[in-house]
Length: 75
Image (cartoon, rainbow, N blue to C red; front, side, top):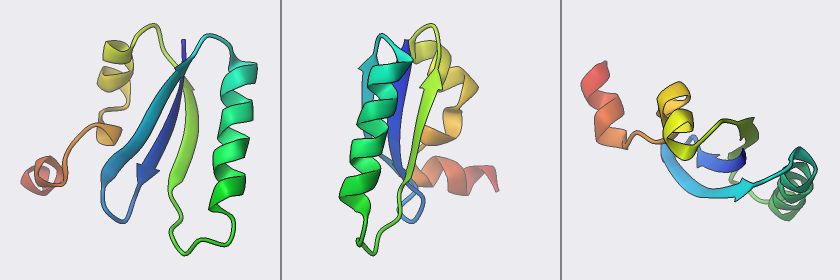
């Protein structure tokens, strides 16, 4: 599975996550999101990651799924 993640670094929160069965579809969707963000003041992190499942992704890339308060507690 491929996951398209749209993450706000400024707000430290997940804006959107979408699941794709192939990398081509995920990459096309990523490009569309990046084009839509052109000229916007907000610059979100938009990435495509491959994982066996959403749970696996949450384990390997947990920072995208933590809340702001979770991050503050870890410091």
